[in-house]
Length: 220
View 1 (cartoon, one colour):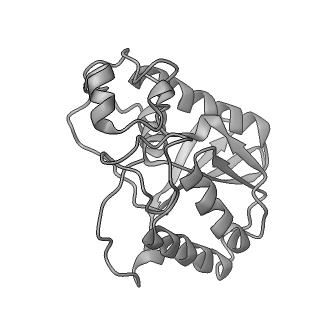
View 2 (tube, helix red, strand yellow; view 1 turned 90 degrees about the vertical axis):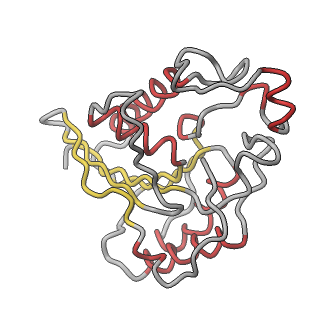
């Protein structure tokens, strides 16, 4: 095989949202109990399926992604082999761990999509730099793991950015969203000979059908 099969997995429901601390590496408090249930359901699904014959298991450096990857690892049949900064959600820089009210008082609230070159905070991403990072990450994985099947636990923003970048979806667009479910699977294939990406699956979340509905919807 010339190319890569890349399965992007959104982490389980986490203690991350627009209340409490801003959930970068310092502020992230990992998964909720429900998020662990979601990850366990995915683990059990993968363990019973022949489709997931992966070669590499990666995660972002954020605790909610790492915890998800460690839970699903037995189902994939691999140990977590790498934590990558470029798989992270929008980097929050110096705002990491601040309460949202404190953030607003220090930096002012704004719409990243409306001001795409404004950074979330010093050391963090802007809307445009985040999308450039995701595009660069996809290129890097295609080069590093040629001929491999890669499972990468990441974040909703990363998956949505992959859709925008690889499908040429304009952003800002018409306000339509492609919101991945927690622990949903999105699979891309890179054809190294034709030099093109193909979307095989978006947000496969059938493993969650037996779980009760979540009490909250969380971001990132």
